[in-house]
Amino acid sequence: MPRKIPVVGGGLAGAEAALYLASKGVEVELFEQKPAHFSPAHQSSDFAELVCSNSLKSDDVDSNACGLLKEELRRLHSVVMEAAEHTRVPAGGALAVEREKFSAYITQKINTCPQIHVRRERVTSLPEEGIVATGPLTEGELFEDIQQKFGPSLHFFDASAPIVSAESIDMGHVFCADRYGKGTGDYLNCPLTKEEYERFVEELLSAERAKLHDFEVFEGCMPVEIMASRGEDALRFGTFKPVGLIDSDGTRPYAVLQLRKENVAGTSYGLVGCQTNLKFPEQKRVFSLIPALKNAEFERFGVMHRNTYLQSPDVLNADFSTNSNPMLYFAGQITGVEGYVESAMSGLLAAMNLYNRLRGKEVPPPEDTCVSGALSRYVAAPNAHFEPMNANYGILRPLPVKDKREKHRLMAVRALEEIEIFKSLSV
Image 1 (cartoon, rainbow, N blue to C red):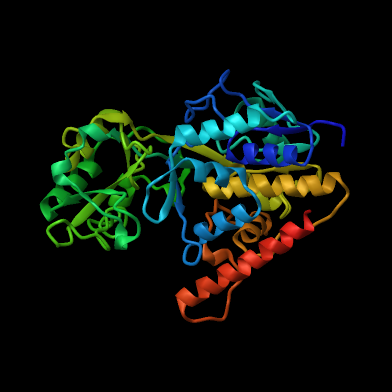
Image 2: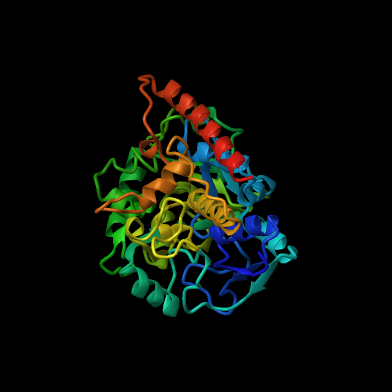
C-alpha cells in the first residue's frame, strides 16, 4: 500500500480515522480547512474541536447505550476515548472533558505521527478513494460536488449552550450534588422556586430569537425555549427536572438548572441542556433571572447552526463505503450519526473497514447486537424518513427479557462479545 490515502476533515471522525490508518502503517494525507477557513461553529485551529458541549454523555456501560458505545470504542483502541480519559473533568456519571486540552491531545498525536501528512487547505471535490469526514457543516464546492454525485443532502439545526465564569456564579444560591448521588458532587445545582421558575419560563418564551430558515431542529439538541413552549412543566420534567437532587436543607427543589465544569480547574461552567437560539443580549437577560446567575458573566453565548447530513440509506453501505465506489467512505455526522462518541465510532469503523479492503480482506461490519454495529446498519438501512440517530437501545437487536435493568446488562455482555469478534477479524 504505497499510496497516500486521503482523509478529508479533522474533526472527531477524521482524526480517529487518520490515526487508525497511520497505526497500521498506511500513509495518510489529512486535509483540514482550518485555520484558513472556519465554519460558523468552529473557533480553534486544533483537530477534534468540541463545538456544542464538553460532555460525551453517560459512562455507564450496563444501563446506558452511549456508555456501552464508549466501552466498545475502548475495546477497539479509540484515540478519542484515550484523549477523553486523559482530559476528563468531574461530571458525576458522565464523561466530560476539558475541551481545549482534549483537542490539543489529539492534535499533538496527529502532528507527531510520521505517517500523517497534514494539509491545511480546503478540498473542493470528492477524492477517488479515502474517507470524507467533513462534518455537518460541509459547505462550498465540496458540498456542491457531494450533492451532484449523491443527490440532495438533508438539513437540521443544531445548538450549543452558554458558558459562564465560575467566579460570577452566586454560590449562595447553589448546592453541589449529582443526580441520585452518582458522582462526587460534581455539578452546581441552581434551585428555583415555583415563582422563579414560572417567571423564567415566561421570559424565555417571550425573548427575541435569532432568525432561522425552514429546516428541522434535531430533537437531541432542541433549544431550551422550544422545549419550554411544549407546556409550562416541560422543562421541569426535562432539562430542569429536580428528581434525584436534594438541596442542602433536605428538600427537593421545584426546579433545578445544573451547571457542569468546562475544565478541571472549574473556572468555567456550562448550562446543562440549555442549548438556545435566543439573541445574545436576551440570553444574558433571561438566564440572569436564575438567582445563582443574577451576576453571571457569559464567556460564550449559545448559538445555532445548520447541520447537513446525507440521505445515507441511498448512499452508504453498512461499512460506511459508498454504493457507487467501494473505496470511498464517509464518516462522522454527515452520515447521520448524531453525537461526539457516535461520530468517533463511525470514523474508526470506516478506517478499519477501508484498511481491510486495502489489504484485500473482506470483514463484515459488526452485527446489530452492539451499538457500533446497530448505528452502522441504521445509516445504511432503507428508510424513507431517515433522520440523525444517537446511540440508543431501540436500534439494537431485541432481547426477550422483561426486566429492563437485566436486559440492558445482558445487552452489554452481548455487545462486547460482538466487538471482540469484529476486532479479531480485523487483525
